[in-house]
Image (tube, rainbow, N blue to C red):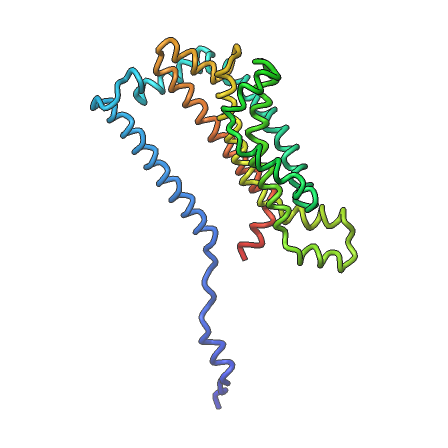
Length: 283
């Protein structure tokens, strides 16, 4: 007599196999899609740039062609003129950004953690954060001169506000249930801050940090135009005085490439420091 198959056994045999997990392939496909779209967008931008000059819509006296810009950039790298002006700018930007990062995060955590400080500082901070950097340039120069101190101070000012504001919002936005749960378990203030508040707020720090990193070179060029011996702002300014249009755009290209590099570094730091969050959100 043949053995009979029970209902649970039949259901087990007919149950389809679980589909394979394809998340890594999907992420890889999205990465390639971004690369393709970005390449197409860049080529389209270069084509429009070339066409507006080739068709006479804009004079080459005011806008160099992509070929002329690239040649001026390569020549500037080869003869050392661009690196000689880029290196002082990089140093000023790094120093100013570093100071703003430390001060902005420390003050942001303090104001975000202690409501009294936030209430006391709010009117003053609202006033200063809305002041135009260009309007403050004469003030920095008057107090600090046209040397390195004023240039670094301008970078600090431009970078401080995005970092500080994001830090205040990040710390103040931590869910109270996390803090109260830690207190219920007997955790002290230092432990709650270092193991609960800071990890929960850390991902929200980075939008402000990345914006501040971009502001560093923007503010620095404005500061260097005021005066000095070396810097990308001075390189661009000198080229404009000599009507060297390709060199002007070679300097602008250098700033753009530095911005891309800084953004990549900030993105890498964000992925590394918040890698634990990806493990939670991917489930």
